[in-house]
Image (cartoon, rainbow, N blue to C red; front, top):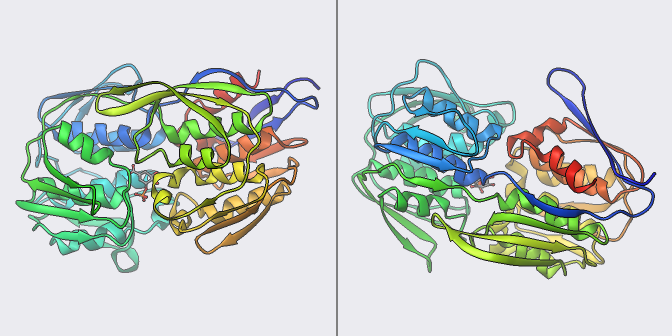
Length: 449
Ligand code: S3P
């Protein structure tokens, strides 16, 4: 057999199997590709557009299911969106403080960013009642990390398990400013509090133990909010109440989606891929640093600034990878890329240790357990740590039947592992990829042909 065979098969109305059969003779991955828009920036552009006065124009929006959840929630609170597409989405905002009480439950689907960021806005809209929920995965993810600081600001929020799980009920009220020392480096926690601070009179500050992604800070400033950032102490202050005005946002390609192709090209011998137009915001480039430590050959070309975010084309050539240790302050800068880094580590020489990443246990799935179990089924040697993994690299993988556990990043990471495995891999519930990467399988087929 002389080519990759990649097929997708509907199992029922809800579920798809992705089958990957690598060629018996070594074939490399070649080409120039683009990935969909950045998920974090897409959410924020839709939300800030919805609560600003005037029109916001968004180019390059991610059309995945997560941003669709954000748009649909804000639509039911009065914002208007043109048809969602990558070319140009127009948002007619309703102005700060004007979210209408929705007639039904707000459904954030699978999206933690939608639910957690939105809570900050809902809690600060006086005299309105909101009920919010999500899918099975989101309803099991911890919400106390945002409910607690919001309650310190005076918010009225109720939910299951001591107000820590969705569905949640929110009675909006006038909040008071606080200085919140977050125990975790989380952009969702930081952004929720900053959004609550938008309508709150005075200075609302969040300090985090390490810097998390700063897209909210950048975009809030661009929309007209008054913000002070102290990089030394990882603190951000919003001075409320603010006035936000519609803007033009250009969403770069998502470095978290590009990461799958970086690792694919690194591990499949003889490969060379150029991944164009990728956001390289320094709070997101931990993956480039980790792969560089592992000996990957990735060049940033044509570096430029687009609408307040740094962007580059990434040229990736295959190389021999070696193990490394990934821990400490770099973790929040590559948190979503750890599943695919685990794949890289499986093909690297030596033992890679990933620590300080217990947050992975409360993502769309428990990404430590699921990645260790699924890759071990293929023959990898991964031991779970309470806050990460120990990965003994260099054992060849053999394809088998795997499951995404409906987690988009697990589905895509396993697909990349399958490219360099012997025999056929079947990934169940592979449709999860469309949460953040709707045309993942089409791109996989393209670079493998
Ligand atoms: C995100 C922040 C991160 C990340 C998630 C998106 C955001 O979560 O894992 O995919 O857009 O703010 P945490 O804030 O929980 O670390």
